[in-house]
Length: 188
View: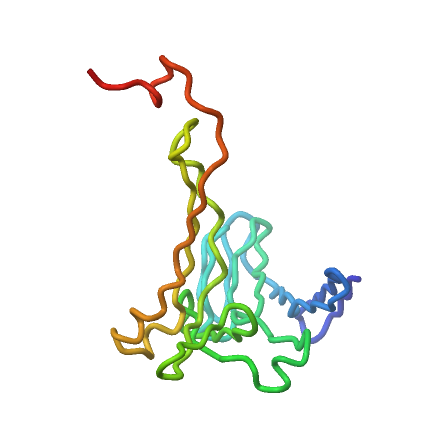
């Protein structure tokens, strides 16, 4: 669904997305009118930006000067929507977003793991995509993926070392190498 409203010189656009039965609401995009001639750039809060340039408005908004000379803004930090009872019941951990100091992340469920001895929590990012196999053929090839410890800034080095579930490797199921392909040749 798509909604649009004009209020006080601003156009508010809301987009409602349904994703696998879960309701996801994107914050409104805010368009501010521009007094510059087309092709000159955009003016926002008495500052001029070149066409195509992105900029932040403190910790409130991320904006971009569109190629049409209109400033498009959206909320800088996402809203947290309760998809299940984990957030409502306080089973999630709120941590600073390592990619944007203005925002926080709500980490719930499978990305959390308790260290058995001291009770601290290891909070991880999502897994990276799998790498390509380390060889095109042969039995020793493997691929790997990693994830980041998100709450490292609040932990001691000793506790960080105990959060060691950050690398995963699996063997690749590849055909044997043929002689002459390079991977199966013995060096003489």
